Length: 166
Length: 166
DNA sequence: TGGTTAACTATGGGATAACATGGGATTTCG
DNA sequence: CGAAATCCCATGTTATCCCATAGTTAACCA
Image 1: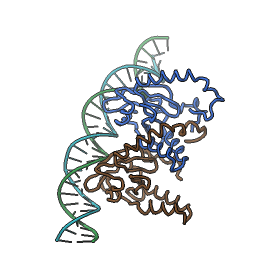
Image 2 (image 1 turned 90 degrees about the vertical axis):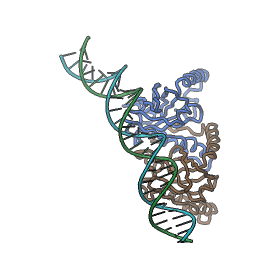
Image 3 (image 1 turned 30 degrees about the horizontal axis):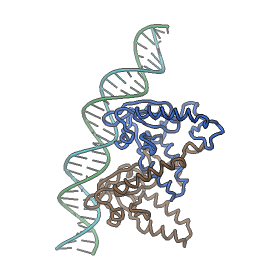
Image 4 (image 1 turned 90 degrees about the horizontal axis):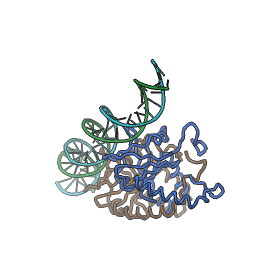
């Protein structure tokens, strides 16, 4: 297990950096080799991807990420409305995508539609998970995210955060 | 409890994603291949389905799920009203549906009536269990679930647990 | 150090197998 | 004997696997 302290150990077990890869006519896209290395060795040789319920992009990770979500959800009250909603929004829409021999996955139409992918896909590493965007959409999102970070940089001080998100 | 780390076999050992399959005139419906793979190897080659007491849809899973519910219910007080209600609602109405040679099951009329199925059925994977909806009903429900998840996303923070999760 | 080789990544196309689905035949039960 | 459920086989479509190619990076040897 890697923990946050292992980021710079023998190998980085986190998704890092941004890559643009092509999506062919069959919906196939090469997962960046760095990302494949993160999930390599796990019991499921592939990634798990679902549409973000927060915008026109996809969220993904290895099986470990999904297990973390599962653990979080199972800690909630069985009849909590939020629990039901998360279950349906995440598990109901998540697709396990296995790597082919060349490290590609096939994106189902629902997923590429949700992200508005058309020929190109941007993989964005975010530590324990990653996102998949249409390149134009990501550029725009990045600009506004940078502006937001600039305007709120004071909130990123060690003492300022209660939970410490990734 | 079987541990989060055992949930994934060679493939993902959880019910995931959403599939719409046809229900023919005989009441037969193909169980999604991914779902069949989850229960494969279990003692009963099929699924167990019962009407939800929470809405016009069906709940289901493999035999392992039923055994889990049984354990939960047996922990309750023998004369607890809730226990009796659960026993009747789940065990009293649950039907074991065996796969035919092509991976289909035949839905009894009580079940398809309860879900209002008419020609199509939506299978929704929810981790350890799944649901079966009439497609139109699920679409409507999904939208509200996604909106709820978006508005409450702060209560789901995988990055918030430093030591946890595999 | 310079040139050559080898390995890996990303990509394209075609063959193959699996899945979902329809119809018919046979059995079982009332 | 009739109705209904189960089993068996056929078919179109979709997804999966397997091959080949090109550009790049890393390794290796002279």
